[in-house]
Amino acid sequence: MQPGLSFEQAPPISVPFRFFLTAPLFGMAAGLLLLWQGPAALASRWTGVALALTHLIAVGFMLQAMCGAMMQMLPVAAGANIWQPQRVTHLTHAGLTIGTLLLLAGFLSEQALFFRIAVPFMTVSLGAFALIVLVALFRTPAKGPTIIALRIAVFGLIVTISLGATLASAFGWQLALPLTEITHVHAAWGLGGWSLLLVAGVGYLVVPMFQLTPPYPQWFTRSFSVALFFLLAAWSITWLPLQRPDALQVALGSAAALLAVVFAVVTLRLQMQRRRKVTEPTLLFWRLAMACLVAAAAGVILQQLKPGEGEDYAGTPFLLGVLLMVGVFMPVISGMLYKIMPFLNWLHLQKIGKPGLVVPNMRQMIPEARMMMQFRLHLAALALLLAAVPLPLLVYPGALALIASCAWLEWNLVEATRNYARFSRELEERLAQEQVEPSPRPPSLGRG
Image 1: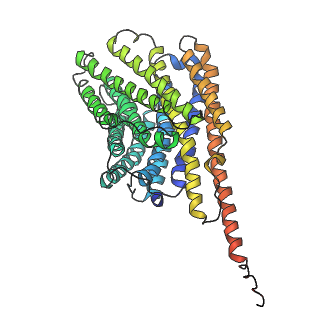
Image 2 (image 1 turned 180 degrees about the vertical axis):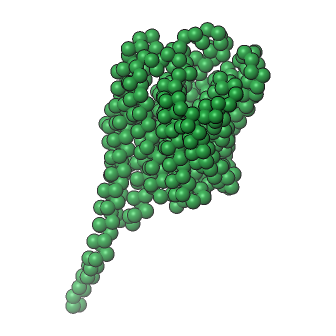
Image 3 (image 1 turned 90 degrees about the vertical axis):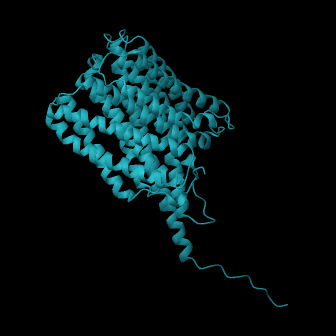
């Protein structure tokens, strides 16, 4: 049984909006930090500045938006009811926001106290979120590739949280642990085992539904999530000997990267077959993300095949990081937010109205021209940050473009929220007027 849309199960609109409106603020903070540090941010992936930038985007922007999407999508699209969604939202959002700020302070100041405080905040809030969501996914009667992908993705989130808590504990309490090896595995699960699998699971539904494409082929949806999970698990085990990459590790890592390429190619091919031949901003965001995913996967494979080359060149990890986070996940999230928020507005306005009352459509929530402007800003930010690897001074305009893109996204989401409040108020006023106005008297039949 495939998961169907169950609109009556939707949580209050404030549940996902809380996460969605917070995410771009962390993207702006990443741009400000990059503007402040300039070319020094490209010096090494192991500096406090580089780690702070990574977590501002991966945790502050990506994870905020993904948690909000999960809180909304699971009850509606997967039939998985979240226990106490508003309480879970308060706990997760507060812990995630405060924990991200504590990590930022810890990386920039190199003070162990911030990591000691961040560990319980992040572990309790995100751990509770992941476990509650996982229980809901296993209790739902719905089946199909989307459910499987989401279950595996949440398990990947649990692995990512566990490894992240281990690293933060090592920073906070000076534990003697193989930090480099754990960091590699932590990053792989965070970007591949959680983020990419979640994008795929959500994409199985939203790409055909919103972009009017054919469904993803069954041969792909049945195998992609499971194959990527086992490849990542086997690749992670090869790090246990704590030695240089061997042939098995290279083969497993390259195979996982090739799977990502297959997902990108299949998605792009489906978009070419869409029924509505209109190039809208959300489609451009997805196309940009899939193209960057192919480029990033190719870079990962080259790095696997020639691990010694590029290790001394600090720009290599920065290049891959920009491709993956700024090129893949930020555009996908932006594109999905531009569909999810107007759809949620329309859905909740339907609940306020009644037959005969016209509810504003999704296109009235965020003007398409404003979405396109943000796409151009983000494209400029991506191009400038990639070009900053050979030309470091371009990091300054790249940071400004990233700030502008995230600020524009935030303003668009705020406008969607304000439009929902305005339209709901207008509908309630019209309903109140209909209740107080006397019903029209029937026409007189006159005398025969």
